[in-house]
Image (cartoon, rainbow, N blue to C red; front, side, top):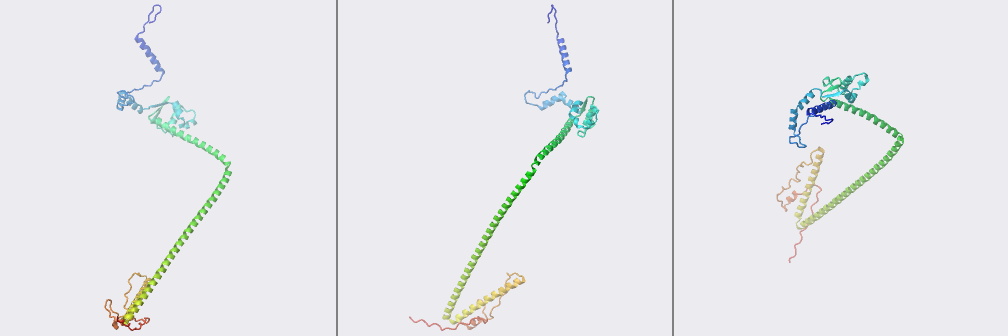
Length: 353
């Protein structure tokens, strides 16, 4: 209520609503309003809890999904020519060479450039804006990133080449000194390497010579031991033969003293056996020589040896020591046989006790 000279003014509810509505309309007309659809993430109103089924149900009921489908079916991306050319003008460099083109022609040149290569169905040219279908702006951004990467690489190549040339020019001043130093170092290294290899070769040669000398000494020692063992074996064999011969002579002498006929028969048997062994030995040597000449195996059995005398008794048959025929049957037929010893008289009987 306003008082002034007893004058009263009242403001009704309808007048207050009308004034607020006019103020709101004036504010909206001065701005670019954007409507936001709010949804509840869950029915319990808990923080950090999202119920996907409830959110999808709200979006379907509110018509948001249908609005998105309708928007995607049309041209959802809309850009003024100034914004589009300011961001993607370098995708169509041919437009700069043709002066006097309008914004519509420049925008068309950007969209149909080889880097973007859009068909007419993916965009529309308006009076103040260009209308793009879904995912077209992603293709524009990809082409822009590719062009910028190629430009950056070109700039890097030029800069790195300039830096490398400067470094090369700075290093070329002392190139001759470095070459001389490198040659000297290489020659010193070669000399050291040759000396090292010569030392290694000398050590290897000494080790090899030592090993060969040790091997020769070992072989000589083995040969010496083998020769010593053979010499001892021959001496033992000769000693054994000598003792056997002495024993045989002693036994023959005793037998001859006891019974001259039996002693002669024993000597004849011994001579026959020695002759048989000598003949067998000769036949075996002849057989081995013939086998080596003919290429046959020397392991084949030798031929059967013939008997020395056809009148020799069969093996195992008894021989009478007192029969002269038995003594004559064992008599050798060779001319080099020794004569029988002379008969000595029997020793006298011992004196009676």
